[in-house]
Image (cartoon, rainbow, N blue to C red; front, side):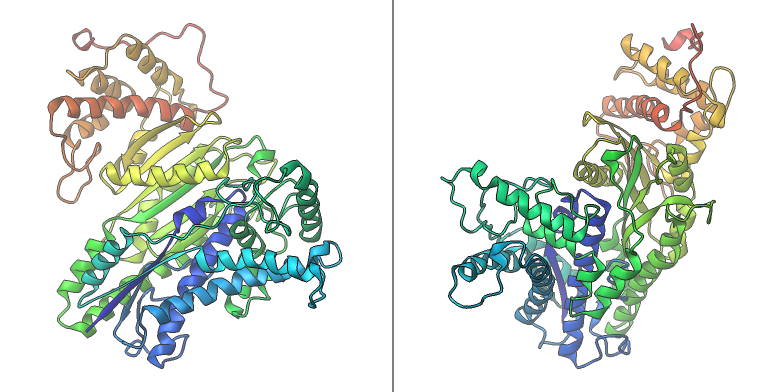
Length: 575
């Protein structure tokens, strides 16, 4: 049997060009919608219903469930059917994207007709029509050149995936000509405005700026400042992401499921999270299943025949998709639901496309979110993750962001933190604190040791939990760093300090389980480094980073360091 693997790019870049929570939802909806369009086209080519065909006839192996609102993986696995070649698949993908872009452009033209001369509805040879056509030309360029499309086939699923990855190494990108000034959101593409096609590099931007300002002022008035602020300047893809989340615009999309998804996930009462207007920190996390490709390969190899192989792989996909909808989403309560499900941490799951998921913790003003609330949620994550029933682990990158950090920077750090968790041995959480300056702190810990460490801390007074003063540990580490007590020749100072503040049981675990072993992730990483110096440095850094991150995440705001605190005594033999 022949298997087909399909994906498209850029995915993370498309998501990261976001300022508002609405942008994230728009990105997720669009990516899922494009993936669903490919799957529906594959089913049409196979002569089966687009929705809920019998498993034995369904050419779609993964994703097993198609859901625009939930999030659909952008790597699609298909079986058989020569009629669904690359040209057919890419045509379905491009058509779906064009529908979204055209819907937004036509809404702007219809809404601002009479307000902006360039949207005159006279379709004769009137100059206004000619100029309108040039505006349309730029939108058509983005319809045709916004994405790269990758398609590969092979005699096995693993072979198809390997060939797909090989194709992705050879890019065939078509850039869009830059016209005028850059977007205020990402700075990556040109500002969209009606006369963008008539602007020449020699023209003075200050001369046309009033027209750009007028366009965005009227667009903001038409759709509300909560969606597009008058001072924002967006590119065509960014406008599409923002506008398509509005129910009045989404209902114009020919696919009914898209409109229904927008109505359900972004109700009229939805309030965007504007982090720049509040002095409030927020928590962002991105997670992914570990070694999914290897796991799917092992399942495929255990199957006796093609039919068993497809059934087994589809079951994995369905289990993970169900987990996202049934288990993960309800684990966070929407912040506007005050007083309801108070036990749940407030936040939203932006997407949960199988083993890949993204969420945010936040509260609506005047309530303030605490880092401890986020940590409590992560303590329960291992049990939550097990509910899908598959024998895989997960790694998550968590970013505790200060209020004035641009959202695109937060998203980038989320991805970096997730990759850091994977590089650090997988099956763990990477905690990253992102300051307004752009600097960050990070500490990684496997799931099995996370709660024992952070809740096992006791200060010099013997206090634990919310009463514990993390500044005791923090100041001792700072003092010892200043004295160069942590060096690459010995880790005894770090272990002794950890023993004092976290207890002998945890200290023994740190010594015994630094590196991974069968069935248990290593605290530092899976395997030792190549030199003893690197191993010692890794443990010292882990303890130092624990002090810094723990102080910022676990310190109670009411818990102040006493005057002239007495430093904890470190055994003389290790100083």
